[in-house]
Image (tube, rainbow, N blue to C red; front, side, top):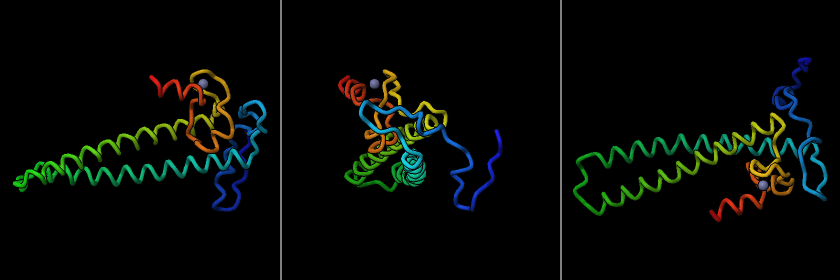
Length: 151
Ligand SMILES: [Zn+2]
């Protein structure tokens, strides 16, 4: 392992070499991954993770505010209290969804780093390049995903 020279600033992606793109699985009839395509998926995952972390941080602040409002004695108006409860529930659901998405993105990025990216976690078949380009965080192939949703 030779430490590759750090390229120009802002080009930090190149200093850790990801799994060779050619080894990422594709479905029958798909072209192999190019370095460029693998880098794009990775960038997209990184951006999504950053976005979700921001979102979660923001909703933590919101939730803290909502909890305080709800707990406070100011709520004589029962309609208002009901609204607040609903708002808090919605916020909690959103937070939960974002946390799941974040975990999924992080796992996809991990798999990209260790070379297991692109294989269905359930049946070990290639997920397919087109599907991953549309949903970089996908860890299941379409078939398994549909089965999971039907459960
Ligand atoms: Zn599968």
